Image (cartoon, rainbow, N blue to C red; front, side):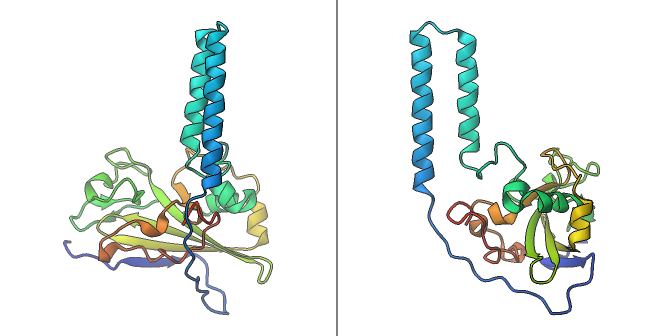
Length: 240
């Protein structure tokens, strides 16, 4: 039970296209967007001026609390994606139809024995890198109350070949990465039209195309993600 497994395994739910596997080019790195940062600072300054004006005019304390809440929300949303404060991250990454498809085809999290023999479920590598925080305590939670997570990658070939490829990358500490691939055509996309895309759904779905700093996370050599430097960003400068 103590031996380490291969760095990643592949599970194909549907057969691959006959024309062969596509390869992804290495993306170009860019710096952070200073225009957006300047806009955020201007917004904060305006909100602070409004707060001072309200206090000077004898405004109520409740109004100040509401304004403070609005400022806090803007600050928490600012480092993330455009529109991320209103929608699930899948939506700005893929658009509504494919976001619903990604949720509909998401694999059911399964526990697998880790190097120590404990049952491990897929977790968010940004918050959990040890077996102890990935031990299964139910179908969707670890013993440390962390939610199951899958990172997504999408290849849209509808215009040329009529299908979409969705890849789900699952990380278990000590076991490395597992890849699950789904293919879908227009019929499956239409069938997912009524699927809800909610932040509280399990597993948590995180699109790699818009994951900030995804290519710069450090891993041990035997757990390095096969997707690093292979997934083009949807917001260059924000997600590289």
